[in-house]
Amino acid sequence: MGEVIEITIDGLTTQAKYYKPLVYEFMRKEWSSRPAWGDYAVEIRMEHVGDPPRMDLDNLAKALLDAIKGYLFHDDSQVARLLVERQEGERERILIRVAPRPA
Image (cartoon, rainbow, N blue to C red; front, side):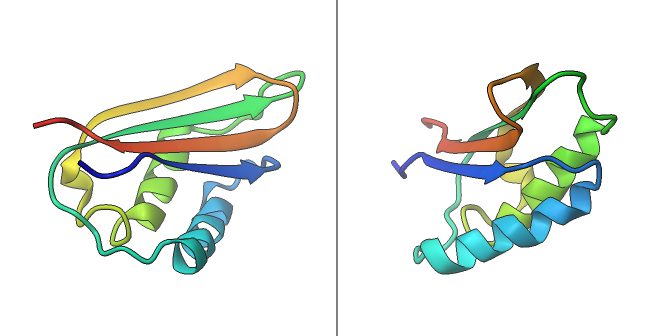
């Protein structure tokens, strides 16, 4: 079974497309394994301070999944569980957790 990958992006913007190159750059530098087959669980959490930003969470999820695809897994269809949430936190950031699901 593969390992759990956690990515943290500091700061928030309402432009989901901003996150894709950040995740892409992280994966390019930090990930050397080939993408795997099988089902995955992906958790995306947007933490904000004060009022939440006006951002569609589905657009955020799509941008981040597009950035991860090809590094951790081959295709979005391998995501068997997807949790996307917004919550108040101590600082503004995006947390991504990707884990293989047992067969």
